[in-house]
Amino acid sequence: MNCTSFMSNSRTKASIEAIVAPDMLRNVPGWTDAPVPACYGGDPRSLTFCCHPGHALTFADSCQRDALLDHVGLSKAAFVRIKDDFSREHGWDAERVCFGNLAYCCMRNGGCPGNRDLVLQEKYPGKSVDEIKHIYFSLKRELSIKLLKLCKNKVLVQSFLDFEESR
Image 1 (tube, rainbow, N blue to C red):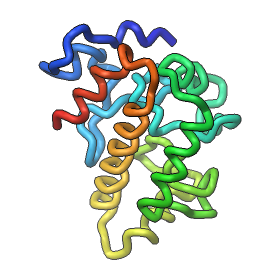
Image 2 (cartoon, rainbow, N blue to C red; image 1 turned 135 degrees about the horizontal axis):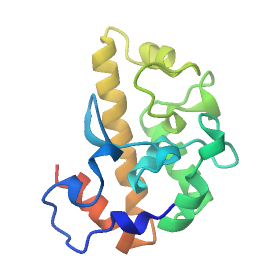
Image 3 (cartoon, helix red, strand yellow; image 1 turned 180 degrees about the vertical axis):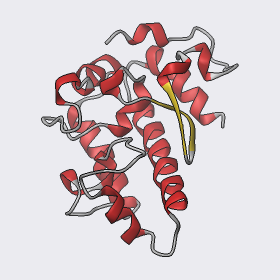
């Protein structure tokens, strides 16, 4: 993965398209201009949608998680700690989803075969599917910011962090 093409010399953001090609962005409930998943070449923000290290469930043949972690300067241990802490903080621990919490769940907006959507419905009773997706993707964005803040390659991640924090 060559993330250097995503870098911006400016710390101010005119638009995300200044650092990411428009076809590499998705608008999902709760997160406008979200990154495509890392397995599709997503920018560093996409780590929020990645599986637990040592596993690549959704798109194992194209998984870029480990390369992206190395590139942004985030250890696998730190990645796991951040995701596990975030899950506990938000009540996202759930034995029925992959790796025991929703922090490792992917971006699939059209449904998850791994119980994510059922668990989310149980965690947010009385909410519509759209409301639940909004909560899920908003929290995934928040998790992305936490991950970016702890990356050591600040030159690479700062423009993404600036963009997310400016909204």
